Image (cartoon, rainbow, N blue to C red; front, side):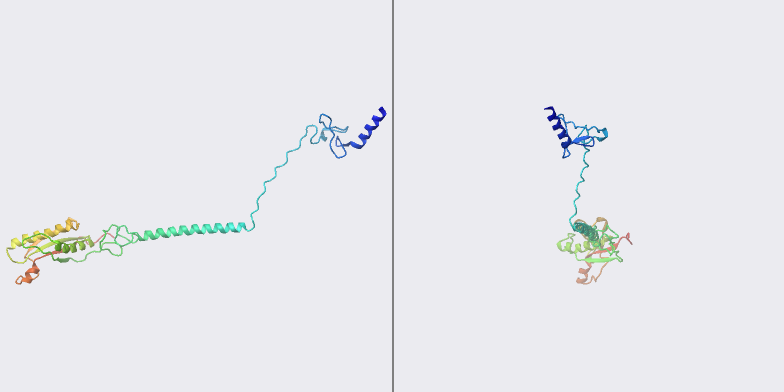
Length: 263
């Protein structure tokens, strides 16, 4: 009986175990382990021959696999470049359009309303409605202008009626066109009656016209004076009815108050 067992162990040892680098392995290369899981060492084992999984040696952690880099689709780079170029062109055009609109707005702006754009206006504070030159500056009145107005008064009266207002408005419009002017309203009569009375009445009528310019047509009071000349300055023959009618008149004598304006 003892002889049979010994021969069986010898057969196993010869056919199933083989020495390999300090550990016993079976015919398919698996390391033999005891019931505690320990690897079976051979007689040739040394610490330098420890293999992974035996005697406490563990395998090194595998190196991380690099993240895959997605390849750009064929032709995508050219399309992206074209899209970027188109976007830039659109932005450039929008900026150019905005600049052109701003320039057009600046060129059309006329702050003082004199008809000359601010970009060309050398006198930017002229009054609206005034006569100005191409530089936006007041046109200088180079001569004294006498403008007769047909304002009728009832005998002995100084009241201005609606027809008289229409005539007075002509003076107001002229003065608004030439803001640097001043006006003298002169009252005149024929030679009928007392000269002293006529002078007083002509002054009162001239003053009535002056006040209408101020109150109704907003002409600055400092620009208008009134004088009564009575029969002293006839323009026609007082010996005829037509001549006397012509001499009973109110005139506006308009003068330039400054010789030049700031350029």
